[in-house]
Image (cartoon, rainbow, N blue to C red; front, side):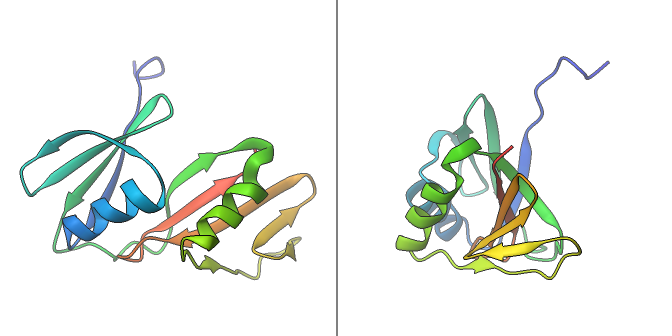
Length: 125
């Protein structure tokens, strides 16, 4: 039923202007629509990302969005660090660290948070 339909990620933020600035300026996503002071829709690849205002923002303790960035992962991590993004470091079984990357065989993963504490991820898959 839904296998051929696009999915949209939803990210809750307490302060929409701060959230918009992070996703637009820091991550470089393009705004494609706004709904007043409640929602900003961004284009990310062939998908969309809804960033919306919510009093419950920042409660998620798990990854909210993952970007598959291929072999550009190290370059993207460096560029985001230069913009002030701090990367998370987790102790995971079977994982080694190479700077801010978690390495599991051929897979490289980097986690970081937005200003509201939403966990975002980059993966080389």
